[in-house]
Amino acid sequence: MSAIRRKPTSSNADQELLIEEQKKLEKEKEEPIPDLTGDRRNIAILLFLYVLQGIPIGLISAIPMLLQNRGASYKQQAEFSFAYWPFSLKLLWAPIVDSLYIRRFGRRKSWLVPVQYLLGAFMLLLSLNVDRWLGGNGVDPNVPLLTLLFFLLNFLAATQDIAVDGWALTMLKRCNVGYASTCNSIGQTAGYFLGYVVFIAMESKEFCNTYLRDVPSEEGMITLPRFLWFWGITFVVATTLVAIFKKENDIEDDHMEARYTEEHELNIHQSYKILWDMVCMRPVQILAVILLTVKVSFAATDAVTSLKLIDAGVPKDKLALLAIPLIPLQLILPLAVGRYTNGPRPMDVYLKAIPYRSVMATVATGLAYVTPYIIRGGVVPTYYYVLLVTTYAIYQVFLYSMFVAAMAFFAKISDPAVGGTYMTFLNTLCNLGGNWPNTVLLWLVDVLTWKQCSTDPENTCLGKGEQQSCEASEGKCEITFDGYYLESGFCVVYGVVWLLVVHKWIVYLQDLPVRSWKVVKQKAR
Image 1: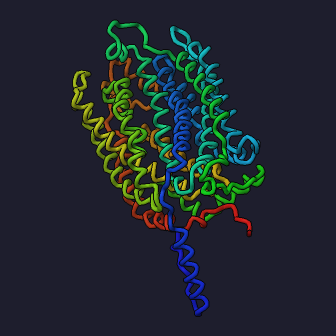
Image 2: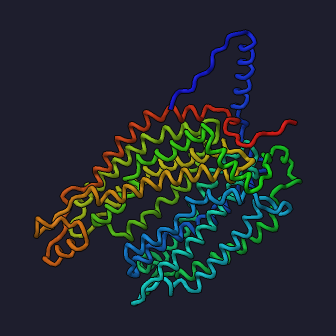
Image 3: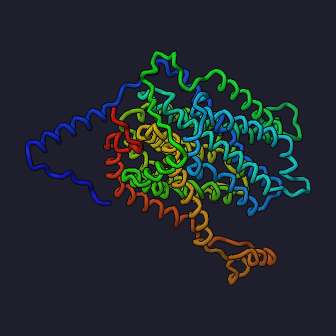
């Protein structure tokens, strides 16, 4: 990437034009002061819609744990992982959501209402048969069918996300559009908490018998079919209320003149043309490179560390339940960080959080290293859990600082003429930037790790056959060199180099006027 230089001027006329242009740029950089008058109800609605969106996301994350308890293989777990893909692929149909709608009903409600009804219907359908499809008691789980159904469920949730992201740009005043990222972060976190953590805890008989019951029972306080039925009904009722009582353009609103309603009507061909135009924009290309490479710095921690803790002897259920005390922090953090990102320079927070997150990633690696020495005889001391929660909580502070800052920046630069597509495009880049490094580093752990059978030094335990041979000889495959720590060291070095190289480009993008990100040209009045 080469630095962009200003062309030198050679006359007084050129200097006057330069001064005029500078004034225009300064005027564009002036940000209106946030004013919540008339927008409080809209913020509450956005928050509620993002909570609903988080429910299926959390529920899909809980299914692998249920499959594991019912005898699913790791190959089957990998097969089910395709259910997570829609949020990384939603860019493919975002232009359709932007361009096809019923004008009288509303551009965003035309998709939001039917999609949420379908979400409710899918949950009701799943509640009738999901126990049988999950298997157990000698019956193999029907993983292909579960993968298909939950892929479709996540597809609907991703489509709802496109509609809500686009609606947020026009539902709120221009001066309050930064709060959309806060609603997104808090709402999705709360929904994920309900769909994953609350469900796993209440479904676990051990948790319920230990903390919630006086008389022990053989099952948890809720089951998956009941949980799905409850939220299916909730989706149907909530969607009906939004469809009837929330107008997409409230003409009686005293602040309607301040609404950011510059949306353009585009057909499907024009929408995909706009998407291609976005890809061809120089600022977007630079931002794409940044988003697709930044999370390599943290991939070893994000993808591998929790698995290493389980290998070291930390129980899976305890590790999952440790998320409960962190949920209040995850709900509060977006509010706290939002105070600093709802302004003209949200990426300043992003840049400041990166080195601290890298430091905490290194601390997490060190914690994984000492874990086998702390856990003796299968007993995990209480102080270890405290140390683990503290480390993870501090890590979350910087993770959420980067997330909320990025979302605020996206909301600031997105062209509302194609709001859903623009926001979805940037969010897709953000998601892919986290998914591909995690996948690569997970795959490389075994490649970089050296093992040896304790009873046969010639057996390197590379495949299942050698592992079974080692077990048959009453041996154990022991790690002689753990590739996880090599990956962690690489990520630290990469993070330092990345920040030194990319810092100036982030500052450059943030300093650009908003019009530099416009993809739809305004017609002359």
